[in-house]
Every structure is written in C-alpha cells, then in structure tokens.
Amino acid sequence: MTALDINLHPKQGSILRSLATEILFGGAAGGGKSFLLRALAIIWCAMIPGLQVYLFRRILEDLIKNHVEGPSGFRALLAPWVLTGRVQIIDTEIRFWNGSRIYLCHCQLEKHRFKYQGAEIHVLLIDELTTFTDVIYRFLRSRVRMTSIALPPELLGQFPRILAGSNPGNVGHGWVKTAWGLGRDGSHEAMEIWRTPDEEGGMLRQYVPALLEDNPTMAEEDPMYRARLRGLGSPAIVRAFEKGDWDAVAGAFLEGVFDPDRHIVTPFEIPASWKVWKAMDWGFAKPYSVGWWALDHDGVFYRWRELYGYGGKPNEGSREDATAVAKRILTIEEYDERLGYDYRQNIADSAIFSNAGTESIARAFKRSGVAWRESAKGRGSRINGAQRIVDLLMADRLKVFESCRHWIRTVPLLMPDPNRLEDVDTSMEDHAWDETMYATGPIRRAPDADQEKSDDAEDAAYADGHGNIRYKAMT
Image (cartoon, rainbow, N blue to C red):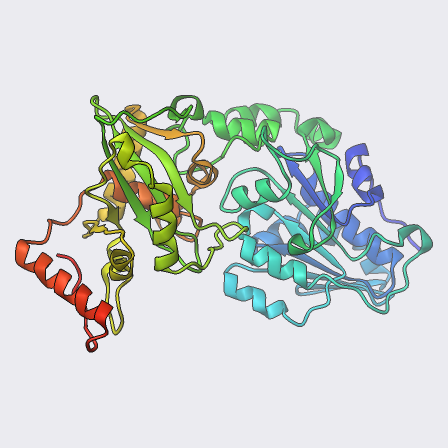
C-alpha cells in the first residue's frame, strides 16, 4: 500500500501515545493543532476498520477551508490513496477501504446538535473548541460511544475518545478553562491525566499545551509568524495567541478595560455611613444573580457580596423559586441591621414585575419579605448600561470583592454581541453583568401612596385566600 507522508512533531506524538480519552490540545496559535486533528483522524481510520470519526468546526465554510483544501488539507494528505482508489472524498464524507469514515460536521446553532442525536461517534474531533458552547459540547460528548469494533491490542482502553484543539478566547473560553482546570488558579497541571466524575462524562481528561515552538514546521516555513502575532495590538490577544495564556481573555467585551489588579479588592467591612442596596437579575433554569452593593463618599461602587443561583455547571440555574431565594437573602442579611445597613432601594430586572396570568415573581418575593424596585428600561438601555459599566471601570469607580467569585468567573469573559458590538453576547452567562447594569443604573419612580395602599390590600387578600387577584406591576 502506498504510504502517506504524515510526520508528527514530539508534542503531537505525545497525544497519539496518550492514554487519556478526552484531550484538549490548546494554547498558542501556530502550534499544529488543526493539522494534528487531520493526521490522527487518518492514522486511526487506517488502523481500525469500521471507525467512525466526526470532525467538527462551528461553521461549515471554515471547516472546508481549514481542513479539506490547502497544502496540508485532507485532499493533499490523502491524494496517494485517492489515486489508488483506497479512499474516496465525497462532499463532507471521507470513505476508507476498510469501512472507516471521517464525517466533516458543523454545529453553527445550538439546535443543530440534534442532527447527531442518533450518531455513534467513536472519535470526536473538535477544532476551535472555545467557539462552541458548553451545551453543544456536552451533547456531542454524550454521542461518543463504541460497539462492535475490534481494536488492535496496543489501542485497547483508548477508545472511544475525544480530541479538541483551541486557542484561548471566544464564547466558550470560560467553560473550557473551568473544565480543564486552566490558568493561574487552575486545578490541574499541564499533561496531568485525571478521571472526571460521571456528571462530567467520566472520561480520562488531559490538557496538552500547544506553543509555537512545538511546531518547527511553522518556524521553518513562516519564520515571521511570531512577529505577526506580536503585532496583533491588544496585550491580551498577544498573550493568548503567542503564549497560550488562558488568563488572557482575547476579544472580551471588557478587554483593555477590566484589570483584576485594579478592580478586584480584598474584602473589608462596609462602613454604615455608605449607601447600601442590592440588585438582582432573576433566573430559574438559568442562574439568578443577587449582588449587594455599596457607594462610598467618593462615588465608587463596591460589589461586596453575592448570592448566585449556580446549578453546578456554567450557565445552569439552581432552579429555586422566588420564596426559597427570598429566604436565603433574609438569612444572609440577618445581622446587617445591627451593622447599620439599611436596604431601601433594591433594584431588579423589570421582567419580574410581569403578571401575565399569574402572580408576578416580584410579588412572590414581597410576600416573603424581600421587596424590589423596578429597573428603568427603554430603547438603548442595554447599550447605555454596558457603556456605564465601561466608564465606571475606566474611572476606577467600580470595585468587586474577591469573594464575589461568580462575578469574577463570568463578567470578564463576556464577548461582544456579534450583531451589536456595543453590547455583550447575551447567549453567554451574563447574569452578573445584567445585575451590575441594574445596580448602577436608574430605577423607575417610586409608587405613590395610593398604589402602596393598594399593594398592601392585595397582599392581605392573597394571604387570606380571598379570590383570584391580578397584580399590577410597580410603576
């Protein structure tokens, strides 16, 4: 059989020999990640008859341009076997003589994941993993299984498997960083192999760092590539793409604005003379975010406490009802009055005041002892709110206690909305961000005395079980 000219560099070869079954080959640009996905797909398909390999990229056009065409694409790599009839490349499917297949797939929208519901994926390859959401990845991982495939003795226990390549940044940066324990606060070392719990798939996970120097071919064929990386401009993007730094959020909405050294502070006791309040972005299936805020005498906002409805996975809510959350808030605030804190103007998303056919969420909170005021929304309020946060950060007038871990975990990672660059991408975990907009923004005017009396009467009627009351939103 005609041999193919596929050579792996030492770092790439370590992945071929790795006993891990869920590997992220990630970090710097130019480390040979995309080539390795193609090379291993071919090697494994040749070694294992009947193997089903699925190679994903978020956008189909990117997949074709990056993996099919070009001097090191599938057409070029497989040309000798195509000429001898041992391999056929038909549209988005590559067929081997031994029954193995490489399927070229995309998943541009989250709903597209259901196209693969019945798939049996023996090898899942994902290029640019951080462009995928956690929802898509978890679903595709659930399709990774293997039956009735005879493995060579040297490969026993290594399949089914997942291999992903990625640079830092983009919409999936946060969940990928957390899943593989990356960055300065990461929970795992590079090259370490560990078994994940069942709720994380139960596979043998490993992070293999990719650096430009791991790919001598790039240095030989394009010696000026590193200089072009350094010419990207933004320090965060340069650190991400040249060094593979997972603490540098390339392309984030707050890139160049948020600085943890300036904006994250050590907790201290809030003086009773400062104005204090809390703000909330509600969520049930998605997380809710409650933040306690203070304003000092110099006009600096401090987010000094948080309650976050975290369901254990990125952007998954704890599924608590309003009554349960209100009880948690009151428990947290049990001793605040003794410290002199007086929460008078607590502000929440206006959506909780809607009472279409049922009791509003705001009313349920009020019955449980937590009253909210309605945030002022209108045309352009999201863009104005985003600019307000940027302005406060740039003026060093917004500080966050280091104990607010979910704010720190989510807000700096938010990407711009690709269709509206002056706002964050709302498909990401933006709940602490929205809460920050409400906390620092305007509220609707307070209800007048007649409205307050009406509200009190309705509360009493509801508590006594007198009739069905249709509640009015606070205006």
